[in-house]
Length: 170
Image (cartoon, rainbow, N blue to C red; front, side, top):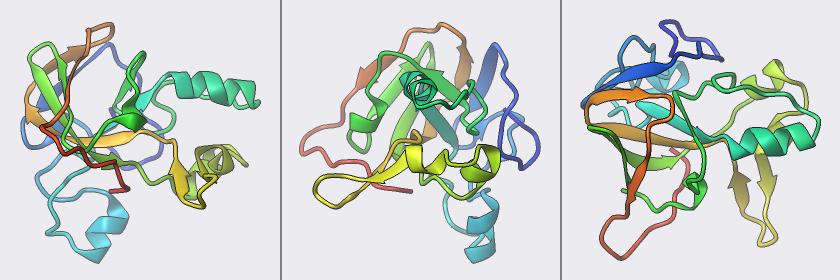
């Protein structure tokens, strides 16, 4: 989490999720949009980007490509392992103890990633074989039930009722 609008976040052993708001003490916590570019466009938009999650397998892939990236450095609030975050449908509920995050969509990586590590953006956004944009920088969600999430907590994945809709950028 980070109390200021910056790129990377502090690594902590636990965070408190506040229902309908996000991560306690994080600059992106709020009912309405908190990301500066979105606030400039329309500050009354609902905050569907309360929590940013990244699968740690991405860090492994980036290391293979020559980029050292540690948890929190891409601005995520939670890092997971063993969950195919990018393959989840919209509305999937991720339960960490008592806390529940509902997945709203994909993070849309921006130029700040290249400011952090030159060339990194090309590793996180590419074109698929079908010509569609592929985004690998994690997923966004809202806090549906608050609680404390600690390092090592198991994650329960609950898919929404069918039909399932693929994640798009939010």
